[in-house]
Image (cartoon, helix red, strand yellow):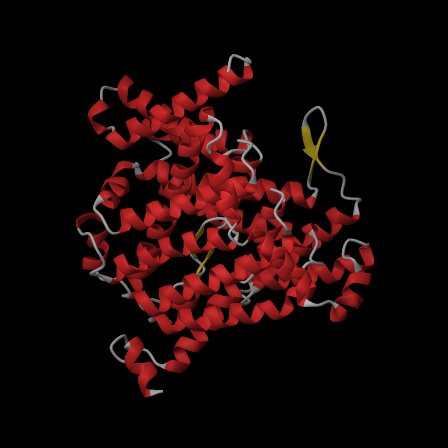
Length: 461
C-alpha cells in the first residue's frame, strides 16, 4: 500500500486509496454505457459488432492506464461520442470511405495529435478557432447524436417529409420505456443511470420480441471465440485501409478534411474537459493550463495528459475503433474525490472485467441503446451556453455550423460551412485581421472539397 501511495502521490494530492477506488467506481458507472453504444454506432459503418465491442474495451483500458500511470490524473479515455458518429455517418456513409480506410484516417489524426502535443503547433490551433464556433461544434454534434438516437428508436419516420412516428411498434415502445427510465434515474442522480437504462430496456425488450430471448437463454453456452474472432477483423485493419485510401487522387481533399475534423474535435473535447474539471478541483494549476499555449514537450501534468489522450487515439485505431477522447464523465469521479491516476487505474481494471460479458453483449438491441444516444446528445448541447446569441456577427457562423451538421447528416459539412461563413462575415464587417491563418487554410481545403464534389456529381471527374 505504501508504494501505491508513493507512486501516485496520494498524500501530496490530499487523497487516499479508498477515496480513489470510490472515484474510479463512480467514473466507471458513469461511462460504461460506451461498450454497448460504440459498437452499435460503428456497426452501421459495416464493422463487426463483437470486434468493436472488444476493441472499445481494450482501447479504453490501454488509454486510461496511460493516463493514470504516465500523467497521474483521474481521467478516463474511451472512444468518443460524436467522434464515432463522425466516423460512421460522415467518413464512411457520406464520404464513401470503407471502414478500414476510416481507421487509417483515425490513426493518422492520432499521430498528428501526438506531434502537435509535443510542439508549439498546439498553441496555434487552440488560438485559431473562435470560442463560439468551438461551442457550436460541440453542441451541434450533440444535436446530431440525439437525432440519430431518435431515428434508431423509431421516433422519426420518413415519408415525403419526416414526421413523428406512431407509438404502436414494439421498437418504439421499448425505446420510450428505456428513455423514461434513464431520465428518471438521471434526475434522481443514480450512479450508472445510462447503463441501467440500457439493461432495463434490453430486459423489457424480451416480451416485446425486440431482444432475442432464445439467444439470451443460450448465452451461457457461447464461447469467447465468436467475439474474439470478430476482433481479428478489426485488429490492424487500419493498415488495410492505407492500401486503398490513396488510389483516387480526387479523394485527397476529403482525406485531409477527415483528418482535420478528427484532430480538431478530439483536441477541443479533451482540452475543454481538462480545463472545465481540472481548474476548480485543483488537479491542474494555472501553470498547467497556460502550458497549453506557451510550452512544448512534457513538463506539466496537462501536457502529459494531452499526450496520453493522443496516444490512446492511435492505439484505438490499431485495435479497431474510432477516435478516443478524455471523457467528461470523469468529472463524476473527480466530484467523488478522485485526484490521482489511481482513479484511472481502477476504471481501467473495471473495464477489463467487462470482457467477461462479451458472449452476451451482442443481445442488446438498438432500441435499448437509442435512449443513451438521445441523453448524451442532451448533455452535449450544454456547450451552446457559451455562445452570445444576441450578437448576430457571432451567431451567423454558429447557426450555419449547427444546422448543416444536422440536416446534411455530416459533422464535417457543418464545420466547413461554419468556417466559410465566419470568413465571409468578418470580411463584410471589415474585421479580416481577426481571421487566423489556420481558418483561412482549412477553409480553402473545404472550398476545394466542395468544388471537387460538385464536379464529381456533374460527372466531369
